[in-house]
Amino acid sequence: MDLERVEALLKLMHEYGVVELGMETEEGSIELRLQGAVAPVAAAPAPMAAPVQHAPAGSAPAEADDGTITIDSPMVGTFYRAPKPGAKPFVSVGDRVHKGQVLCILEAMKLMNELESEVSGTIVEILVENAEPVQFGQPLFRIRPD
Amino acid sequence: MLPARIDVARLQARTGRPVVHLDECDSTNLIARQRARVLLQQGDVRRRALPLVVAEHQLAGRGRLDRRWRSLPRHNLLFSLILGPDLTLVDAPRAVLAWAAALAETLDVSLKWPNDLVDGDGHKLGGVLAEHEPGPDPDRVGLLVLGVGVNVLQTEFPRLPQATSLARLRPRSVFDRTELMADLVRAVDGVDLAAPDLLERWRARDRTIGRRVRVGGVEGVATGIRDDGALLVDGRPVLAGDVELIGAR
Image 1 (cartoon, chains in turn red, purple):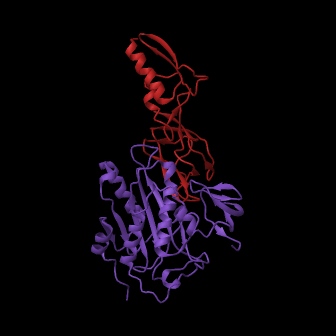
Image 2: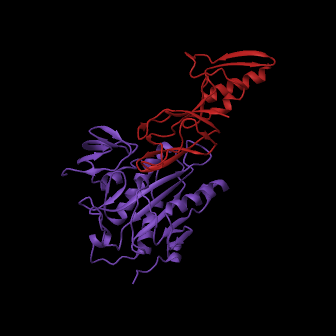
Image 3: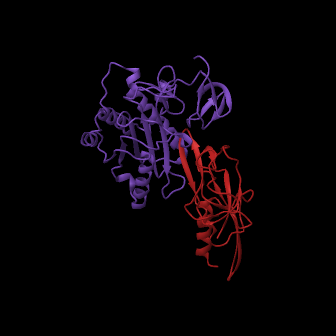
């Protein structure tokens, strides 16, 4: 692997706050760790495309070891699984969802925010109970992307 | 005889916004959200004139959690503003409180957390329901739809003992709905979201703090609001729910 490519990777790691990155390509394998990094923070053994999936913070999907991703809350609010009490939930475990599909409503101070899926895939887990308060960045759904 | 319709030309001239005027619709928020989606697909929303959607009558006006909002045709104000503030989603709820404060000032009424327009006794004459339409960045506001309902000329509210209207509050006043709506829209558009004490105007109109309240299964004294707009009940933050005032101030 040439120096330019390593530099580009280091830059991406900085940008996305990844402190440790291991990678295998046809040219061989490489492990990078940023200086001063204490412990790897959610450093998945990342495939090449991983950094571009890590948009900064909030609702951006974060990839886990098992190939699933979490959809995280972009705001502090109350989590609703359905458009109104007693209605059918937007999604349930096992449902196939497409990118842009509404997963839940987050309400804060009567501002309703329909959270859309960032990816197409299958709902593996719903991590929050209906009507529970959620924090910024809190994982709400686990999805296995297609 | 029904009251006069909204004067669209005057409303456009006074607000500088393109007006979508409907005799009736399911909900102005639904129409405004459809418009917002189209605008977001076209891109460059911060440089466009954002519409104001107005209805004389709503068939399925919605409040929080899809609750119905009843209104007689041509009696009240039902409108949705599309707003494109350059904000993170985290900061958006505070903006909604600031806009609600601007509405309350214009009508010279009070606020019940988070954005109910109420009289001095806590009777409700209006409310706000804000909805977010996501843009390209999941952490920032795409467009916001601010749905506003204000009871103006309607004086009877069967089975709604907590409801009131401007006509009930000020029986000797004459109300021009077009002027009133233009004043409200201009007040919202005039809010400086960068102001350091954004929530001061809200606090100045508030009827909630200091009262004993019941909200979302919690009962206690409303002790204040947090910087993000959350209501503090005995110091604990509440983010959503309908506040019931249960004690004297």
